[in-house]
Picture 1 (cartoon, rainbow, N blue to C red):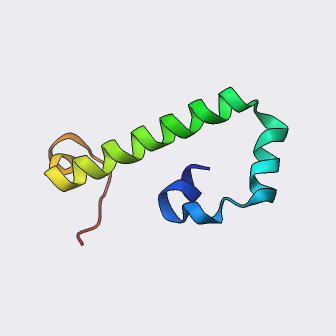
Picture 2 (cartoon, rainbow, N blue to C red):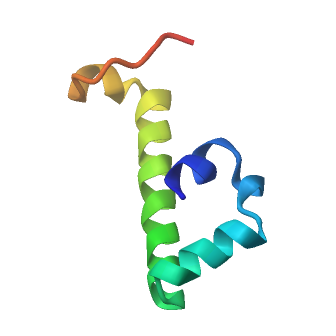
Picture 3 (cartoon, rainbow, N blue to C red):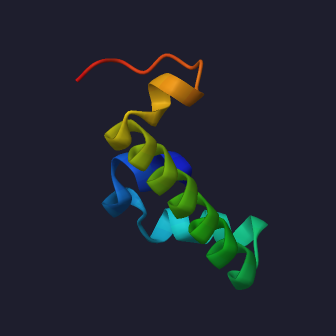
Length: 63
């Protein structure tokens, strides 16, 4: 779900949602989606602000 949210959220079609529902209840899916969104946003903000170079040892390619 995180990969689809980050790269192509439109790829979350009915079969994908059905698979999620097999493993998680609606409240868990909502919480998962909120946490994924929060971490993606924080990562993008860090890259935008340049904080990825100061606070993170993970390689981030230059764009």
